[in-house]
Structure formats: structure tokens, C-alpha cells
Image (cartoon, rainbow, N blue to C red; front, side, top):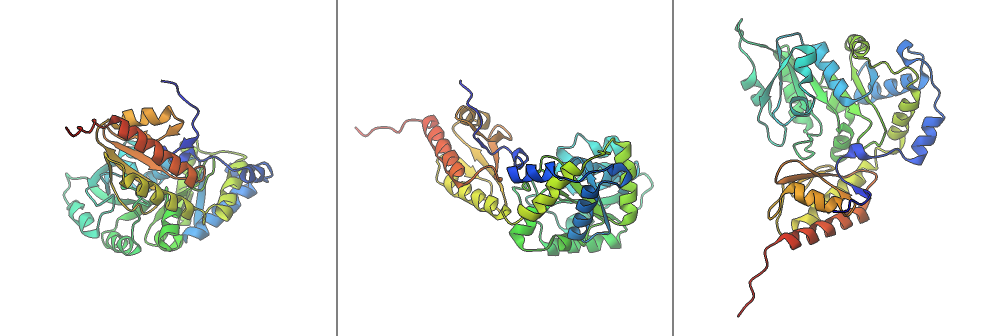
Length: 355
């Protein structure tokens, strides 16, 4: 099968590329040694994100996974336990970093599309037994990737935050798509961050930056995060070139996330009428669309699409995930829907003819 160049890439919003305007901002960035707090662009980005998230301080890191790893290492001690949803990125897609780096294990709870309740947390808390792990941290993911881009409500987060304070636990937010949640819900990022002891936002997904994420919290937490940043080799020196992309994105790419959400709905609407396609969520909340196929396997459909220059990732034998972002417009969505419908029709058994 001939493999065409990718022209419509729906595998992830991490496939987004910096725009020409963002590249110009990066090229013009004022830089210095960020390890010595001498890079003005990095300092400006950290101050801005700390203010955006309602926290005292922030640190610029290479990736969101490193944000999670460092936050866990700061909050937990070896043998501690983290309460997180069974479909969370922290539990499934970080190479067991919590265990490998912090010596902390994850106690998964079964939420709804990745969102659990304070009652779920209460049921998962360990009692005061000296031979049991110690419950130390609650981790939430906003939005929930494997939950189909589901948005946590502010009320649910506040309730979990109140429980965390009563039980002397910390609350951490994996904010990989936090700004998507802000745009979809109209709730300020600082309000979402208020119940949390630590929170980060990703720059390299819907915001379209090539690299980076920013972790925020109290001054004491960020001072300790810096120690872990050095320990993990995360000091980036003249990182203002990368931070400038983040500053540009916060100025120019936040409101446009609504376009990605509209395109996800457009994709879901198109797929809804394709025989053999079953949507996980008929009305996507943000920019992720999960769907199951019958009549051919998900890897087969992905392979056929790839031959036409359309990339959609297979999550399992039956499920695919499509993620909208700034590099795919509504015409690209229409093209993808048309290709999926045609391929699925070709795989369907022939209809018996009347005698």
C-alpha cells in the first residue's frame, strides 16, 4: 500500500506546529541563562502563568510529563499512595514514573469519563494502619484525555479540594488541556487552579508551541520543584526561545481553541451517520473524539486512512482517537469524514439483492 504524505493529522494536538508568527517571536526572543533566573523571556512566562493559574510562582519545564513527575516527587515520599482515575495519563502513559522516581504507587479509582467524585476519593482513602500505604496525593486531569476530553466541573474540584484539606492530602492538577477546559466552560484558569496545591498547563498541545509546560504552586513548592528540575536534567539554559512561543500562544492561541472544539463537534456529527461507527461521546466537550468501528479493525481503518494522507491513531482493536488542533480546519474534517465513510462502506458486506 502506497503511503502518502500526511496532510490531515488528527493523531494528537501535539502534532500542531508553530505558526510563522510564532516562529518570528521565537527568533526575536530575549534570552539568558534560565538556570540562574537570567532569561527574561522565561521569567516573563513563569510570572504570567503563575498569575493565570492564581499561584505564587511557576517553573518552565520541557514537558507535561516532567511536570507530573516533579509534582509527585515534591508531594510524596517513598511508600505513599496517589489517588487517580483508572484512565488517567499519570497511571497509564508515564512509564510508571511515580513509582520509579518518587517511590509512590497509584490507587486507581473508576470515575465517569475520567472524572471521579469526593465520595470516590473517600472510599479509596487508606485507614490509619501501619502496614498500609499512606494516602498522600489526589491527582485530577483537566481535560481528561482518555475520558474523551471531558471537562471537570468547578464544583466537583472544589468538593475534592475541601476533602483533601480535611484529610491532609495534597491535590494536583494535570493541566495538559486546561486551557481547552477554560475555553469550553468559561471558568477562569485561576478558579480551576484554586482548589489545587499544584497545577500546570501544557504549551505544546492546543496552544501550538513546539516544546514546554509550566508548573505552578506556592513559592515553597516551586523552590523544591527546581531541585527536582536539576535532578532530572531539566535546566534548559537559554530557553527564552521556547518561552517566547508560550508567551505568543497565550496572546494569540487561546480564544481560537473554540475552533478546535467546533471542529471536533463537526467530526462527531459527520461520523454519527456512518454505518459501523459508534461514538464514545456523541457531543464532544472539547477537542477529542473517540469512536469504535465494526466491520474492520481500528488498525485497518487507520492504515487505509494513512494511505490517503489522513492520520488517525488506533487506540485498540476497535477504538480510534481523533484530536482537532490548529493545523486542521473544517475542510480537513470534512475530507476525513468522507474518507472514513467511503472506507467503511467498502468494508461492509454486500446488501442482498431482491429476487
